[in-house]
Image (cartoon, rainbow, N blue to C red; front, side):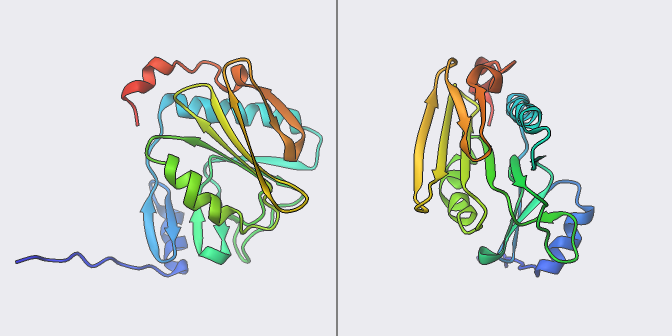
Length: 197
C-alpha cells in the first residue's frame, strides 16, 4: 500500500513565528517552508571578503551592507529568502510591524554552491527582479575565479557581464565600488572544494 505524505502549508504568520525561534534559517515559498543548506569554509570566506570590501568602500555613503541572516520579503511572489549579501541605499524598508524582514535591496550577491546554482540563476533572479529598487545581481562561484553579474540599465533591461580569472576587477556598478577577484577570493583554496557541496 502506498502512503502519500501530505505536504503542510504554513501561513505567513506561522512561518514568521517559527523563524523567530528556529535553530536554522528557512525560506518561505508561498506556503512551503524550505530549509537552507549549510555552508562551506570557502563559501563563508568569500562572503566575508565581499562584505568587508563593500562595507569599507561604502563607509560614509548612504548605503548599508547586510549579510546572510536578514530575511528579504518578496511580496509579489510571497517569498521569504536569505540572500548572502544585500545592499540597501537609504533607510531599509521593512515589512510593517517587523524589524527582521526588508523589502528594498539595490544589490544582491549570492555565492553559489552546486545545490543552489540553478535556483539562484533562474527562480530567485526572477523573484528578485520584482523588487522595484533592485538593479544589480552578482553570482560568485566558489569553485573557480568566476563572477557573473546582471545589471539593470536605464531602459529596465538586464545586461550580463562575466569576470574570469584572478586578475579580474569586479565592478559593482549600482554602488560604484570595485573589487579585485584576488580580494574576493582571498584565502580560498579551490582544491578543498572538489568534494564539497
